[in-house]
Structures are given as structure tokens and as C-alpha cells.
Length: 107
Image (cartoon, rainbow, N blue to C red; front, top):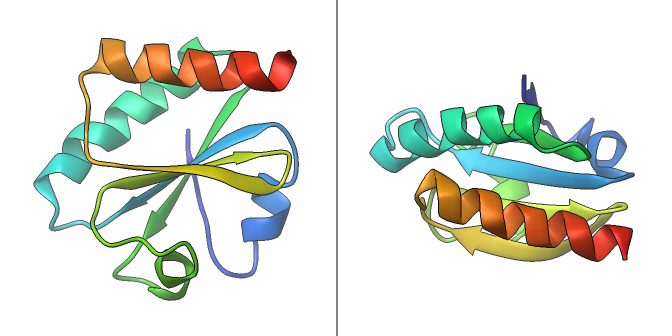
């Protein structure tokens, strides 16, 4: 189950492995589609961790990563933000993308 991220725990939650930060808002329809897919994929893909950040609770993280719209995923690998992806995608496409991300870190 994805953990909620704050300014205080962001570094700790992203320091190792492959982490997807789901930046979302409760009023966002596409966010309501993406979040459960990411939770499922966290269970299906070994080595993937998903964290969530509600922009209504704190905009500073979204501002730090220059997020312009929600949902946005910021991909971290071993503590470093390496990619940012906005929007929602069909689950098979999202799974394939995340598998490629995971394969890069294992290579």
C-alpha cells in the first residue's frame, strides 16, 4: 500500500530502489483512476515502491519538481529524481513502462 509522502519523509522514502511518487489531488478524476493502478502495480512488480503526495496538503513538493498538472508521477532511482510523467495511461502501458524503468536500474 502506497505511503503518504511529506517534506519531512521524502528523502527517506526515495533513498533506495525504484520509487514512483504519485502526485495527486482528491478532486482530480484521472488521479482516482491512476492511484489504484499504481497500488496494484506495486504489488505485481518486485522492486517497485509507490508513494503518494496530495498537492492539496502541501504544494512545496510539487513545486520542487515543477509539476504543472495532476496526476504526475516522479520516478526516483536510488534517491535521484530521473523522470516525470503526467497523465494517466492504460494499465498495460503503465506496467510496460514501469518494467522498463525497473530493468534500467537492474542493468
